[in-house]
Image (cartoon, rainbow, N blue to C red):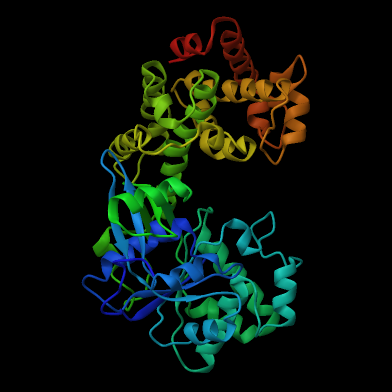
Length: 463
């Protein structure tokens, strides 16, 4: 047991969470932990479907651990919100917990692959976990199987449903989860599926906070600062955001009281995050790596690159998001402050992964919008050209390209006409751009400037 982590008194349990990894424990658990100060009903039963490591550590520490907030001054607080810790061998206890009348919310962070979805976002009935759960519905191994079983038990017992809240960043995550659960239940019991579609709310959500992986450096930092020998501390930046569709039932926890945004337009928040935060991240990654920077804060300390990214956001991205229920200028200010946080060592090389999957949503959608407006397109093309030159550098140096299309990208990047070849990949660039001579020509011109005069020259000319 960790010294100083005794919990008194024990809160009630009103939430079940599947996937108690670092992000959940640094993000949702922090919100709910603060909620307990005024309402002790909402303790969290943590459920891990795959491994026992975190579960066993939570048990040994009485459900408590340290959260380090990494900002100009690092701060520490004990999170004491987890009332139970259940693992793969605790199926009976998980089932009983989901059937408890006090459970009103079931949250989940199981990564996108944990939802067993096909490429089009529908349930993949051929997924091994779904095949298993349909054959043994009372012994599920998937999140969807557990939700369906939990709903079946509550319906049979005359209890209202709990509300599932997906906390993984997928587009329309609640809608996809609801459709998948109903589709799964429909194969077992059409009446249950109709009940789910009729009475269960599946809110869409957005979550955001940079959460570095826990390592020995963090454990030592916590031990030195607090005296606690904590085996599972977590850390995150000071900024945290949780936006939920404003459709929660009346008997739900008052999450708004601890800073959760209840919105009728979660899509607007998601679009702002993709284009402003994630668009800036990708720009910093590819341009920054070509300029020799290693981390986000390092890149933002470069005056030319920082000024370029700020102009890109304010002049290239924000106009295309308006009108919006969000104060976009304030959101941009918060974003730039986050990017300059030197306490978070967010590697550009990691942000650069999977560019073929990220760029369409982070930058190409904005470029398509700009084509039909009077706004300048060239600044938005700088990160596209930088991505291509980054791919060239990786391929020609024999360094790995971390991307689902790695083979295609590497083959194209090794050729003498790499810009044309990559821009012609329909898996990345839609026809409306790939067939536009103005778009293609401008990207080629910027890439040529980067090669002949350097990246800084391209920033100056395009900015």
